Each structure stands twice: as C-alpha cells, then as structure tokens.
Image (cartoon, rainbow, N blue to C red; front, side):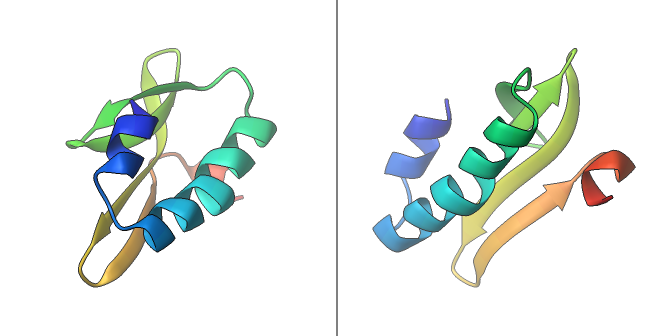
Length: 71
C-alpha cells in the first residue's frame, strides 16, 4: 500500500516520506501494519491508526493519531 502511494507522488517527497516517516516508524514500531485512515496512508496497531502521512503541493504532512506517537 505505501509503495503505491509513494509511486504516485514526487520523487523527492517520496524519498523524504520513506526515509523520515516509513523507515523510522517501521523500526520503532515493528508490529505496525500498513493501512488507510482518513483517506491517507497510515500505520496501525490492532486496527487502530497511530500515525498517518500525506503529500500535497504545500509539502509533506504527518498526522499523529495517538498521543503516544508524539511522546
């Protein structure tokens, strides 16, 4: 799912998302799964979204859905 999303956006943005969001979250929370939340790619644990991300013409966006992610 994440790979399809990364292919649909600008190469530089895709690389930033991959390195700074996807790889970091994957390492810190290895049991998180790929999913969708609010129409955007998101990591989930037990079906609950914990962090999502998107890209638009203004830049990259990261959305923490769980207070534990911010800590």
